[in-house]
Length: 600
Image (cartoon, rainbow, N blue to C red):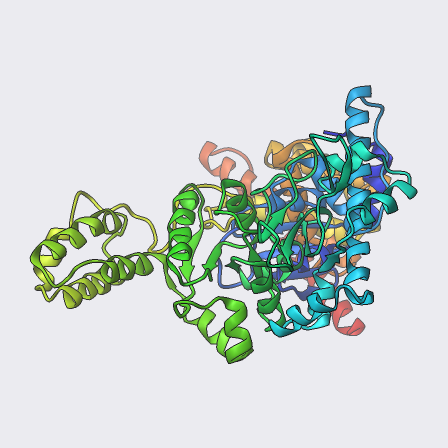
């Protein structure tokens, strides 16, 4: 993995638009001078507790405690390490990055990979031009139009055409300075074993670029246009860049709509995906002609927490759903099935019924567990006692996954109705061991950026709340905050070590102007929380004074409690001091509110 210079990291951080970045996954609304809020992408919630400070480019959720900077946001949502997050942001915002001097072998491998990616991008652009500009590709254009696919959608997915000549790509790439070994390594060319001659791998085929989530072309899926061509679909060969089964077709285009919808639709073929996007179902991806793999499930988990399977309604498609569920069993994904008529695929249905009808089918998706029960009942011999016994035996493992719930009772009733048996008997025969407490239609496991239950956050006492509010107001009012902190004895006036470290960090930040998060994770999360809080506050010297006096009030209250317990000290004097501080605090708060009203 490449290591990048500190200057590169700083340039990338400066270029990030935090509203744009987080807004690709979260519906944001303004909630203050420098604060936006939305539903947290890291845990389930109905009211927003997640916020960002776009100026400082930090986020924090007051529900689950997740917080950090733009790099951490990408790491959590995309399931990558820091270098991968930096590369992702550099690519998104067009920033050139520099690599720290690295091992010569590693540098050579990285340079080779970059060359292959450049070659694949050039070739994808060539295929697109050939599809739309050449006479030879007219039958390909007719085929795509016959499937109901429009030029705009096809261009968005960069669909192209490979000419029938054996060396078109080969010759053009050689002229651009690429070698035959590079063409073979990229999967664009093949070397004849008998003659040792190099020739184009893809000829007379419609070309579908296979991209990673950053939109970089890694390979191609190619559909034959001649009846004499075998196989009908041909993928790039596995190599340095492309690995079959690791990616999802259209994930680069579907990622933002899927994140906002909190669900992703999975179709089978390339044209299915394009037709669904054309129909407005922009959160659709494709399997690239493979069975659902562990890597693809990981990609799905990074896209959304709910997966809707819209695979062909034939036996192969149903088997693919079952295999996919087994692969997804280690991930915290909710699986649902989009009901499709037997013998049809999504592209056919969009063409025949229209976009609205297809959207209605998606809305009518059913939990995967119901699909499994329906499938078992449909395939069984329910006319005989032996067939009923076999169906119930096959369904026992399914029901063993279901806790006591309305879903379980509904499915027991379905089995009883289809078999003609008493519901009580069916329930007793299906019961086997304790039910596992998982949600109907969900599977277990871990995945990047998965929504999880909100974890109880540490409850701050009155002193902690006052200290947090004061530090946030210091960040919102840099000049007044810097002066206030300079006058304080941080070690004596803050109640916990973490708050003392936070106060020291804020003091340095206000003095130096640097907003970089500290290396300590706990402290970094607290600084992110303070920064997001500050985004909803006004720059106000009176507000800083009010929050500073609140700290004094809390300190005197602690002294009063100690004096009472020890039966020593002038409690009356301390009470009078507390009341005086509260009076001054309330006055400062009133002045701050008047400032706000006058500005508005």
